[in-house]
Image 1 (cartoon, rainbow, N blue to C red):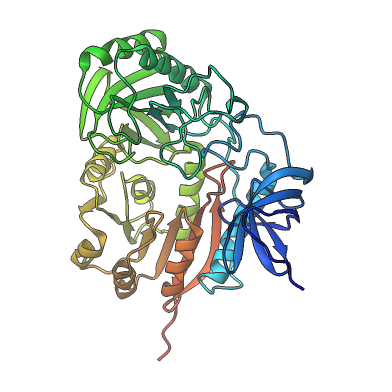
Image 2 (cartoon, rainbow, N blue to C red):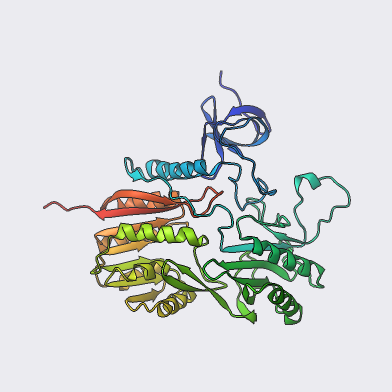
Length: 468
């Protein structure tokens, strides 16, 4: 008789696989159980925290027999913060499971089988790889497990990363191993100043207060840092001493700005930006190209892996110098610029006006003259492209393409499409529509985000021959 599984029940489970989202997989009388903080070949005692008709979700209470793929995570916040969930999993297995996520998404969502998915290209760095970090301020910090229930614990100010799946639980993060070490020193100096100032941290539930975010950007090529202090209102008198302190102490800091936002949404983007010290941007290189990065610019967060990603895109385009390329969702023009030397013309399209301004500026910096950019909603501005492109690059947001964009891409009839995605599920969904007119030749996963379940993928598509 099948076991009845209820919320709150504790079970001994053997973990057999891993699901997209990073949870371990177990089966109990045919029911799939997703187990947080578990990896394949673990034997665990798990507690059911949610029971649905076709599946259950559990969390590990005790580790009975650890998997041979487990390692001791070097970060004390591992398993507590949402920055990275896979530190306890050896890196080689992370790469294998990420590739499998791509295979499974293509098979089950896109109904695309027997497509070659190459082994995942590893990140050159597995720690200290992030060139951008955002830390949230709060007036009430989330306690660590060993602090729970103790008297005399300071529950006030925190500057750090969020507990997974929450907007108001913020850990007071002393160090994040995903950013270069100097970033942690800047983080702690900023924390001490903010905490001891006479201005309060922003309440994530009350929506009152002053200090909101600290964003740090780093250029690997030039070893430059940008500090972006995000506040709820303007107060130069309070901010300038912090800017001066950081600039005097760290010569690597070349830009300090203050972004001001009154929006309730927890997004570290200002409505107004005020320069505090140094420049308003930093510069970075990918390959032989140089890019100017402002506080609110989009730029790939793993610079060294981005070079590998762009090389995979270039390889899949197979350009000869005679082609017209359309680059959808072009952002600040990094992909367009990297392909410009191999194409006749590249047309970038992007909804963000500030991104287009940055793209045009980056073309001038790199003396690239065969790129032009169209600003506007892709599903509307695509109709303005009257020429038939030879190649279309598609690099959509996590949600994938709007169905009207997919339809327009099919109408354009380019010979080759290169689809770049940070979400295997939405990539598979979009490819399922495109496969009516295109063959999916192969897919190259590129690991941009070590110790997380996220994976970047590049898919190569070729238009099917129409038989007379």
